[in-house]
Image (tube, rainbow, N blue to C red; front, side):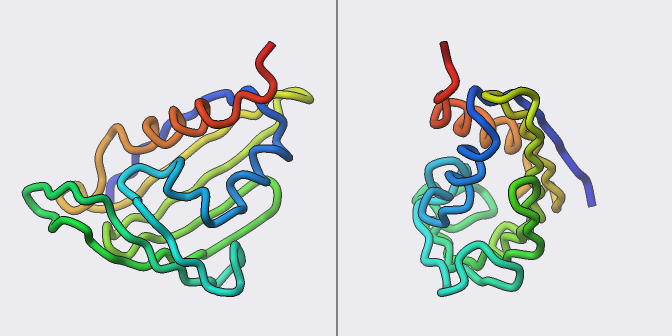
Length: 139
């Protein structure tokens, strides 16, 4: 399956980025095409399953308001999260690397089928949203 990747330096400490990402209810704020989430009681932990509500934006191959599951596959706080979005058939990996006390390099890799859920711009869109939401280190 094809993989697309994007990296961006976020203007926030890695601990702040991790705290934001680790809250399941922030997923719709930073991940494109997700409108809502219902996490299970485990939250961000390997094996957790979250019910995900898609945006009401139909495309050629996608029905509006698609519902799917997010399966948390791997968590290594505060540096890495891997999850699988069943509705879009995407595997997503987010890596966080502290570049200074108040800066974090975030890398998003997305793997999946082109015609179902993958687009070249998806990782960049997610990082653009994170950048906008996490400017705590901006001078």
